[in-house]
Image (cartoon, rainbow, N blue to C red; front, top):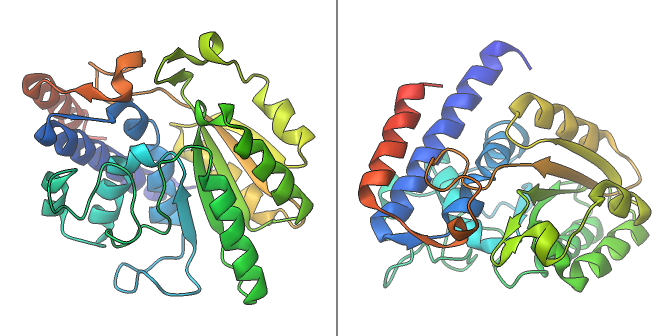
Length: 276
């Protein structure tokens, strides 16, 4: 990736972080930590890798994303709004009565959402179903999925892992948002999942582990996953929960936290000043 390609992606990620903090702060409470930890991978997918069209969001041969950790919907909404799937001013309706942007992703309400999610553990299975449907229909579209590290405690994730390997779903590229925290505490205290690399390799996946806030590292990993011809891919993202909001970074309570308006304003000002 050249600097001319990297620089606008960094600016886009910065913008998405600002929109996400602003949207949740406008509501006053929300899933800030897990939203901010996936902003960089969402930026890379929607602005570099995914074949999608905001003017035709249900095109049958499009690439699809299943955000299994559906509580991180605010980050995806900000990404989609900035991409042009719907007006940016919708973001201030987040999780309010009559909104098109509920707290967790809903494909029946929001343009650009490919799968309703939020019941943790189920999204990877849904992504596998989409892949198999594409295979039946003769489409080679990619299906991307993002799961949480806490979500990986769910047994259904590993049932899905076996199935994807069995069916040799090389068009499936999944990511684990490994921010080391879940709703009840640190991962190693609640239900440790290391060594993730070894686990996914054992289930027959092509596995890579990268810095989930380094666009260049992730770009290389996604290109390698795209080139895989016989296995599904898992890209483990080492991330920081609440990345970009100083008051939320690496804090357990950032999973679903009340937002102080002044703190949100300060965080947004810091991001703008960074001018990435």
